Each structure stands twice: as structure tokens, then as C-alpha cells.
Length: 215
Image 1 (cartoon, rainbow, N blue to C red):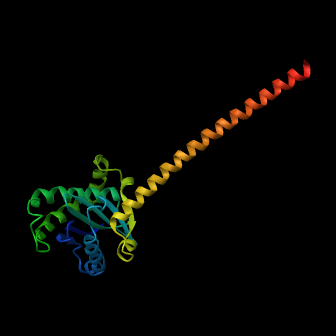
Image 2 (image 1 turned 60 degrees about the horizontal axis):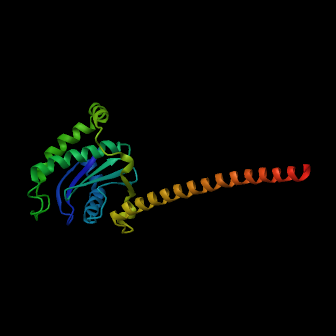
Image 3 (image 1 turned 30 degrees about the vertical axis):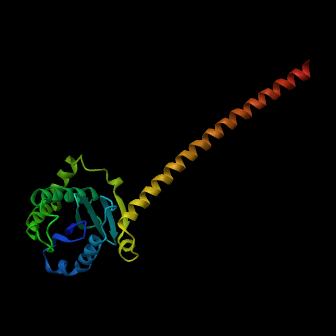
């Protein structure tokens, strides 16, 4: 289930639009997450990853940055990441079509709060189980979810880690994996050469021994 959606300007973290679960109990429970979402938006910068998932217990924050705007959703951990990012992409396309030219100039928070109507409409289509199955089968253009950066909400908010650090860590891990692969390939090559050398030495020794013994 998609419980919270927020749209914010990357340059200064200004919230532009938002939508929360409509029933009162969920809204009360979401206050902490709303606060965390606002903090996340204020931590955005030019180096922040374009796609990112932050784990928050049994919930996940999903962030998509496009054309200077961050689209954030809070979903239950069981909600498919692929569907969450398809949902955010849908919002980003519509939001930019409607407000693209006005985004850099607004100064008042939630200047586009009326966008909630569209958010509710799209959210319903993604939450509906039959629609989810259909979207899952036809959504072939979405970026592979394995390439989405994954971090933890506590690291970003409580420890003050920048979102860009998640991307850096992932890049470092990728570089380390590539280095390990090259090192392993080099060692395998050396091992193969060593085996051939050992066999060659054996046969040369055998030939010398036979020639010495019989001649």
C-alpha cells in the first residue's frame, strides 16, 4: 500500500504537493514518517541519486528525482519496488506537464496542493490488485530495480549521512567487485601457467633422465 506521497523541489527542499492516507488512524500514525519525509527532502542536493530506496522498519521510502523535482512515496515494505517507481514516474510526468514552468518560481509551500487529486487517482490504480498485475506485465521500460540505490533511513537522518553517500557507497562496492573479478582472473591465469610450467618441467626432466640413463 502507498501511504504517503510528497513532491518537493530539489534546490531547497520546498514541498510542492503532498498526499496522505485518508483515514484518521493512518494519518495519526504517519506523522513521524511525514516529518522524516520533509527532512529527507531538505537533504537533497545535485549529487543525490536519481532513484533511491530507504528502508524504515516495515516501511520503505522510495525517491525519484527528475528535472529538479523529488517525488517521494512511503510504502509498506511488501509493496513491490518496481511498482513504487512506476507510480513515481507516472506522477513526475504529469506534474512536470502541469507545473514545469512554475516550479522554479514558487515560494509558498504546497503551492500545487491541488495535485493531490491526481495523486489519489493514480494511487488507486496502483493499489488495485488487478491493476498491479496488469502494470507489472506491461511495464518493460522501467529501469532494472537492481540498479536502484538502497539505504537506511536511520543512516541518513540520525547519523547525518548525505543521500549522495549512498550512491558513493554503491559505486565503491561496484568498483571493489570489478577489482576482485580482475584479481581473480589474474590469479586463475597465473595458476594455469604454473600448471603448464610444472608439466613442462616434469617432461623435460624425464627426457633428460631417459637420455642419461640409456645413453
